[in-house]
Image (cartoon, rainbow, N blue to C red; front, side):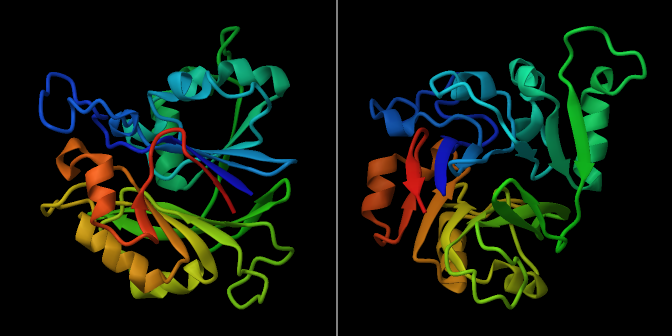
Length: 266
């Protein structure tokens, strides 16, 4: 299984428009952070996590091949605003999009022309699937377990991925799992068993100082220790967190900031 970080930035991206701060003026390409999105791939299956407004820019350098499914974490614009740009992929057939009831409602409101009774030619052909926390499903050879985290008081989805044959809480075949979480502030204790077997964790770390709906860097590190993953990659980071190289130099080697375009083999 291969993970490609398409974007690791927060809703405004980095550099932030009009900002001349230390981070936004960095010459390091790793400090240029598009809105959060990622690809999960095996030889048979290709999944997209979120489809934000930078999707076209993010996907252009990559091989043009079928996307087997798009998993939506929640219905905020920085995670769904690029859905219209998936239309070139419709030449492979309908695009299967998976979302919980809240995100599904948001998509219907954001893209009503895609779901109208009489659609005009050329609109994205989307097959919208409603999913629910704790109800596992598979796309191709990838097993997926949705679970719930809290984005302040908004429940959103995190995802655990594996290529095991049996995706249950107590299966012994979960030692090579990838877990992806963005925009989390808190998680209820009863959700933690659904992260069992996480080998690689991706989780949000917005900035150093407190925020009402996102984890700080320290909170993300504490959560990573709670999960106990072999390696943790930090995403959804704003310019306030600082420069990539300097932040990573002060973090343990098993917890590091990710960067746009980074590829991780699992």
